[in-house]
Image (cartoon, rainbow, N blue to C red; front, side, top):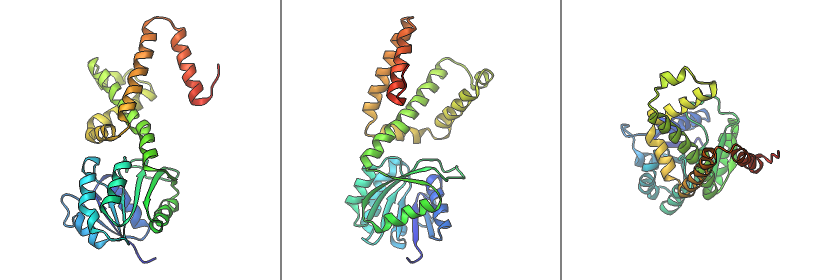
Length: 261
């Protein structure tokens, strides 16, 4: 295969920047575009064999609609967003290119990605799928194939529910008017780790986490489960009966881990 030219829309930061570095290691010629770069998204569609959408979730649909019609059937159109159903559908609808939805399940700050999970959602074509799988496997990542629907269902738990729980904990602590400095004096190692995650969500990039939660099509079901569980366990704890909460946890342990007491 000839030397591949890859263009990363949103490649100046975050996962786009990480993916650009990865492809350079694979001897690809890499171009990036961002809000302040000379090259823009349409330029990458013209120049590159592989065009990657790595912009925030809220901007993904518009970029796909803008760039997709400029591609040919010989190119690869892919994305790195944390939701897959809508982006894959839009890439298929708006371009004749091969289409792959892709989600590396780690942050761009991670230096050693060996063993880390990457979800690949094939949309159209096989040639580029083999190439992309090879890129990840050469770097010792665990590549898993899934439908966009299955991916989003699992992300409803791994990301949406997880981040919702973090936000709920942070907001509950904020209502108690306890400062992080004060609570740190009494923290266990595990709780300090939780507070670090809360800080990341609330301070570093709150819009990203809100997009992940609100954008997931399963969020209604997730909220329903969350509210039901919180109400149920809360009522049992308030009753003062220690047996019922214990039995509830044991029942959940059996469902999750096959544990019997």
